[in-house]
Image (cartoon, rainbow, N blue to C red; front, top):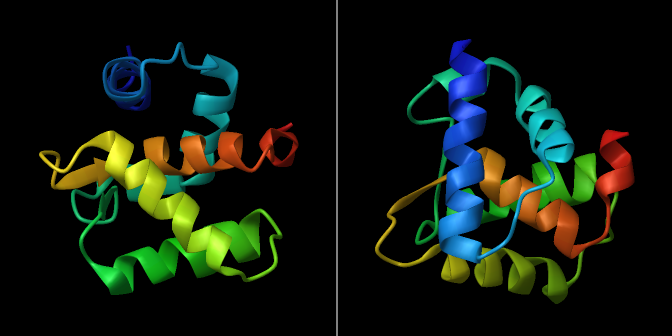
Length: 113
């Protein structure tokens, strides 16, 4: 099993354990591939739910640029909702999981088709 496949399995386990959902493995794989080599970098592969600057980056670079959403308070609400569901005990959340959950939340899975 490749390193990427191992990470995808880890992400899938987080989606099951933290969100109580069965992940769409095809979508999860595409989100992970879309993150490129950043998934192998310990810092870049994580999202800190308590770092406002980091959450702004998720909003601007993923929700607005990648998913094509218009800037609104609902974007940050959705990010906070996902990070809250992930759990405050998990300090650094996997970026692929956060992006996957946000893509599903905004029904933008088609971006990854």
